[in-house]
Image 1 (cartoon, helix red, strand yellow):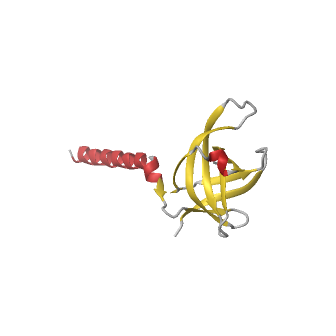
Image 2 (cartoon, helix red, strand yellow):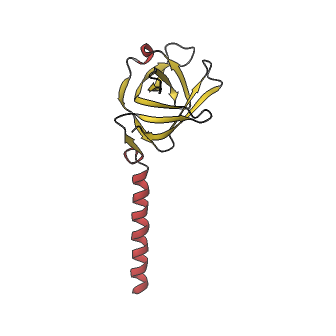
Image 3 (cartoon, helix red, strand yellow):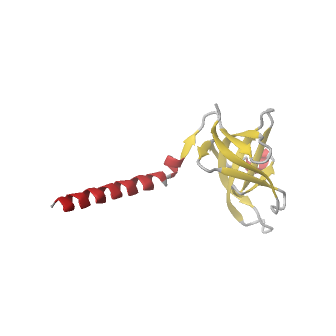
Length: 139
């Protein structure tokens, strides 16, 4: 009888551990809204920028101008006060753009996420120019 109780306790511990693991996989558990923006540090230079807000929308990334794809965007503020925008089909393929390109995107306050990054590429998308990693909410 005692081994049955131990087995039941072990099973309960395993199940509750699995539930906690599933909870961590949920986006709500992995991200945190940052009212003053999220700090991103460039890997090589150490330059820190603030992502003020993040957006989602549709854009064209191929020669077929009629093929809209899902896109992600970020509004960036430098320490010197310069504003800029980046967008792309995914965070590893981001391009510098004018505000007009992302004006119809849906925007939300920036969120910090574990292991979040942005890779800014040249206009052709072949060369990674800058790699920014999330270092947490701006103070």
